[in-house]
Image (tube, rainbow over all chains, first blue to last red; front, side, top):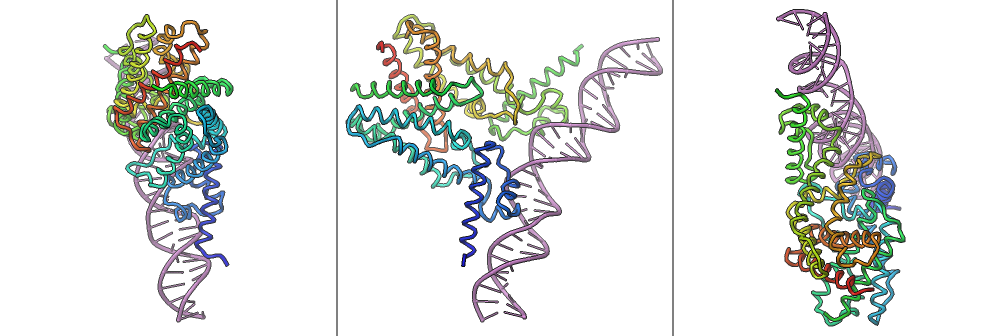
Length: 203
Length: 203
DNA sequence: CCTGACTGTGAACGTCGTTCAAAATAATTC
DNA sequence: GAATTATTTTGAACGACGTTCACAGTCAGG
């Protein structure tokens, strides 16, 4: 015997599945309420029993993407104990980030280019999820520059992430000339190594 | 006596003016064909005599934004002749980029987050305009690392730009906690100085 | 089997970009 | 300057979109 609540939860998952596929295949603009309804076999209006609006659906897909990204970065970053290992870990995380973005281009883009509807506010859970991403950077950074304050390291981690993110984002932007993957990876590795060398050389 | 062609050109400029104001004030999503028509005092359909579609209008606004950005970067980067001056120039350009992005937030965002309609291709003039931005980086880079190949310097310039762009983009993203301006500027300056130091120390 | 509270339905609403037949205007020709 | 042809302007109409809602259907508890 399945309660109606459980049924609804299961259909909500189906809905998010369908939305994920739609975005991955056709981008954020390819997400249509009517298509989703048809795909999961319910009426158009029933979607709004599973989800408040399309914004929530996009946020939920984003949540899944973040979880998978977190797993990918986790798999790429072993625990570190020396400065050399810290640098290698940061390089590995950066390259894993790049690989994930390339392999999940449309879903990854949604994380950054989606804007909430006029005046709507991003729910707390969505904001806090974003923070977990920095963990993979802050941990190696702790052994790379252990003498810096936690606040300094937070800012450093944020800057390092942003810099790598920028290289990936513009490298994968087809509006400019596309950069071949090995070239992109070399640039990322160079950037991270440069930063690590500069940071560990006490200054 | 005004020819009809000249009249049309003048109204096209009015249209782009109105579109620019709309985007600057309400973002890309606030750009409505009907509002523009009312603002420049013509019928809805007449817009399509001035512009093929909304995509072209957005591209034309982007073209203006790029021109103003180019001017802002120009004003910030004096000619350089020594390595120290090159570093200072790159820092100045990066900070000018950040300031421009902050002062023209919505217009600047459109440069990167706008996606053409399904299958439509970005016209050549729009692509080539993007390239001019790198000039302000490549020139100082030439005196900073004169021994590198032109191709190397192109890639370096692209990476440096992308890294700074990433820091600005994420720093100005209100989806995460906003970074106060002085903090952001310090991070950018630190990043650029770090890169310049690493680059000039022959490696 | 009845009743009251949910749940699914799809037509309808408002808004969007875009089109197009018709009306208005400009240009050309005699 | 009148007549004719070409061009431009117009705004209603179209199709697609997210969202809503009165109604119909379904299901739990008595």
